[in-house]
Image (cartoon, rainbow, N blue to C red; front, side, top):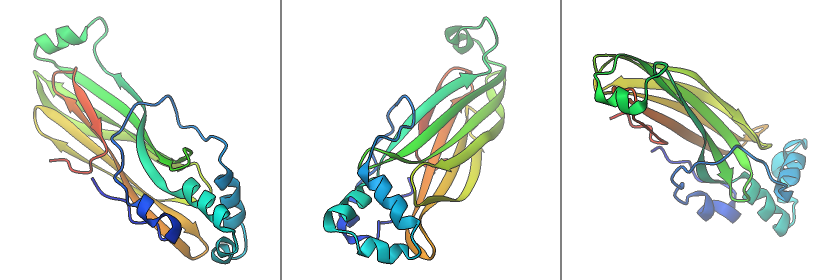
Length: 210
């Protein structure tokens, strides 16, 4: 998995380089009341954000850092589509599956303070003939920010057909900073692997298709 580059503000440099937690299921992307968010809004909307940050008190800088520092990746939602009507997963598994099967997933990055910094999502679909994947498609992908100071940079997709499963990845890159004050860049992948049985699948934040 690609690692996030260290946060450049000294107060949280060690925290920002901590390992990202394994994805866990959550209901949705939420933004609790976090004092650091209003502080960050004031800093990033000022004529000189770097100077505004430097002028904050130590406690205000700490709240800012906790609201802006990536801490844990969360699987926000997941759904499947394409199993023929009236076909149970066990029946699809028992036979040589033919048809299409897709999985959609959304991930989010939470800050130390608990607010959501940004989200990214994608769907991977496999076309299967007699139990063999013949086509892999990555679609309905995108990304969005949820906390002041973070902006979208680039987003790309990649795919791989292993025959017995199809693999799709979205790589969403975000930037923290404004007006030349470049604080942090992150790479965030979301991978879906869909089995040719029309039943099994897995998700991860790995960028590696192998």
